[in-house]
Image (cartoon, rainbow, N blue to C red):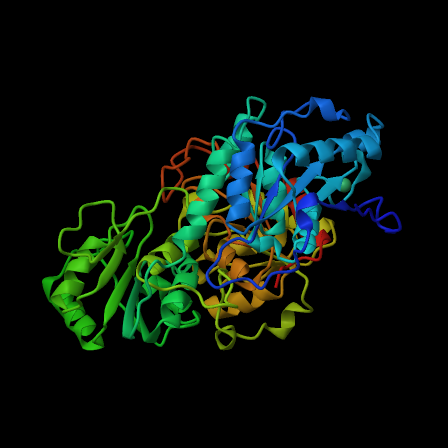
Amino acid sequence: MRQDQEDPYQRRSARVYAGAGRVGRGPAAPPAGVLYDAVLLDRDGTLIEDVPYNGDPEKVRPLPGVRAALDRLRAAGLRLAVVTNQSGLARGYFDEEQMRAVHARVEELLGGFDAWLVCPHDDADGCDCRKPSPGLVHAAARELGTSASRCVLVGDIGRDVGAALAAGAAGVLVPTPVTRPEEIAAAGWVATDLPSAVDEILRRQRAVRPTRTAHGVGTALVVRSDSAGDVLVTGPAIRAVAAGARRVVLLCGPRGRAAAEMLPGVDEIIEHPLPWIDPAPTPVDPDDMRRLTARIAAVGADEAVVFTSFHQSALPLALLLRMAGITRIAAISDDYPGALVDIRHRVPVGVPEPERALSLAAAAGHRLPAGDEPVLRLRDDAVASRPAAVGDPGYVVLHPGSAASSRACPTELAARIAGALSAAGHRVLVTGGPDERTVTARVAAAGGTDLGGTTDLAGLAALVADAAAVVVGNTGPAHLAAAAGVPVVSLFAPTVPFGQWGPYRVPTVRLGDASAPCRDTRAASCPVPGHPCLSGVDPAEVVEAVRTLTASGGGVR
Ligand SMILES: [Zn+2]
């Protein structure tokens, strides 16, 4: 075992130990269409019974089913590392040698791990590795020859999930009786125990791998209606389809058009509102539907893949596609689709939207090619250049608004956040659409530069790409940040599940009350007086989140 005794940063960084499972394993070239190549595991309360400050190997007791679950991960080719806070070292409750004896016993009972990452500090040490700081996750990814975004961490408390998200990894909470209810509410992915977490990790991994390959697709019609955010999170799936087709035509709505223009892999765009999807639909006009059907028929698509969110139906469009002569249609539908769909796909609730869409593409025979990570991306040539007037990169973008007011940051709070960030030494750029200028002006007056209404989506993408961090609700710019690999402080109203709509594979800190009464209501305007899910956020938490996310070098790409 190796320990970085000479590391000058040891006082503040993780201790790294090789594990018994490491023999003969070097960095892997990620195979095509794979979500994860490593699983990181919390130790106490996740792998073994939590015996506080245990330095005695005799007291190591594996939790039920853990050995078999780990062996399933090993058999699937996933690397395993333990990431554990052991403040008992800092407090002198046990020493290094005792801890190593405990870890040897864990490996004797549970099999070898590829690496052990230990934070030996206490909260007071201000280190970068004590969970929920992301240091242990970054260190684990480095040791395993992968990136944090290709890791999933399983742990039993909010600190574990927080560390995972802050590093841009996925985090699964496996609650125990000591896990606090608010930690369970805030987690985007919850499993009853480690074995069920492993089942779901392997299921999600399999779901993006096609069991058949689509051959000879000339033209594929892909569909994603609704807003910019919806279109952006479908990007990886559209790239997967594009990898297997000569030409890709995207049907989107007017509110998603600007985002569609920025997606790699799209050759042509058809813009048309769909009255069964749009939040403020106009009445169905039979002539208009006939025009749309004719327009689709003119595409001459060999297949269609209809992407939807979990509360939207693909079936009305599938009928039009059939009438347009398309003979191969893939869609997610829990409702019986009859003769409308050839590849009917179903997805459990809670899967991130980008993976949900990727799994539909896989069901249709498409996957991302090797080298194309399952992350949000924009076309290089689609992002406008950043206005020189905003100065050097490294500012914080604060975007208070949202098309759905239930997901917007209250103006008064956004102003206090702008003030707190400015006071902490950040340059703050306040962004918003043309109809949000009153809000951005009020917010920027408290500390920042008002850019409300000055950019289109491509311009906003350029601003976001050079930010150190973006502070934003659950709305389009959060996904622009994810696409640029820029960390997000997510002021997330729980009207829709965080696990499905949280910023994808980008370092994130979630703030706000996840168990507020608006939870899972899908409300467009807040149904609860005072907008309590977000109004309770303390601006100091935002400043601290920006510090956490930028301390370890900021963005991931
Ligand atoms: Zn530490």
